[in-house]
Image 1 (tube, rainbow, N blue to C red):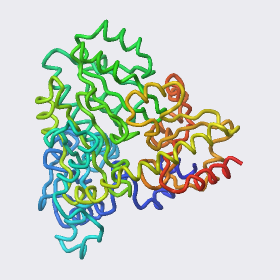
Image 2: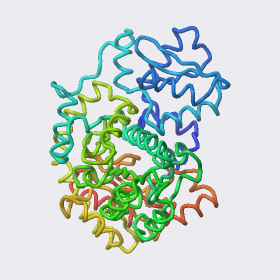
Image 3: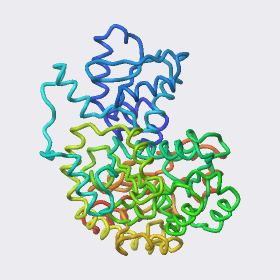
Length: 475
């Protein structure tokens, strides 16, 4: 926990040890190396901060976001795009948050290829990749679980967040033209999804947070009162980190009746486990989770329901708004995606056993997972099989979290959906500003979130090994 705080507070003693991290939060070493090389060889960059981004459009968007008063200038060199600005901690934070929220960073493989092209690196790191048409392979495998979707409906993006952002922007623009600007957030969602809804709705009053995603009566009252102004609903299946599932069939019927769009994000459980495309207008998901189970690719996908009333417009708008996946990232993802079903089978078996162990342990206060009692019925309405839960389990303790976390001999980190089990004090990593202030703690409490909640994501190791490590740390 000392290191978690050190990372969040940017303690130099901690940061010196951090060589890499989740790429939307920690700039990849190859990207840093390329930026440093360019800063040393391009005179116009001297003494300026340089951000390398995914495309020329992203560079223009970032420069526009920062504004000329911050000295932001678009940069291009040999097919690499970026934005430089005068050195400033405030501008640095503003730029980083923008790229983090919508998935705009340059791919590490793109940076590596450019380093090789420039002669800074002798060759790319060897890795197994798919040899054929990677995009077609990814679409082929995804159609095995969503056969109604055609190739044009399956739109890969450079990250899960960019897939969400692109679909949201397409839907919001279409609905705004009809006078619809209100968006509903169901439950506590992943931090960057919350940021997109708060920052990109037309006005603060157009962002509506429904604390309990299972409170269908509350949602129905909102639609009855404001249905003609509601643009759409964004829901995670289940939510992250409380793992709650709304009544999706009822929600879908409500949206259809009122002309609202329904955007569903099944990243926590995966599109393999939930049959939701017929109920949604767009399914948006991370492919970093479960499909890239070796933990070395960032990617996402927006999938348009071809039978939805606005399918053609959403398809065009989303395709135009998303950032494409770098070809080598696609090839690496295509080389892993075919194993998704077998990886998930192992993860599901482990998740059920670990959840049962935690639910029965006297030092565990509360366990949250896909089949928890308060939303089990809703989850099973859309699950392809009763055991298709995904790997996420959140829990709170009756004893001190910090002592447990420090003693626990499991891999620790903020992602999930890997073959490797991962655990983290999720609220400290996602919402450090909230867990460290009385007002923030009160805000979390109002949403039923304990700041000391731990998020465990089961991998494919033997369940006995995961349980043994938890038992040892619990004492």
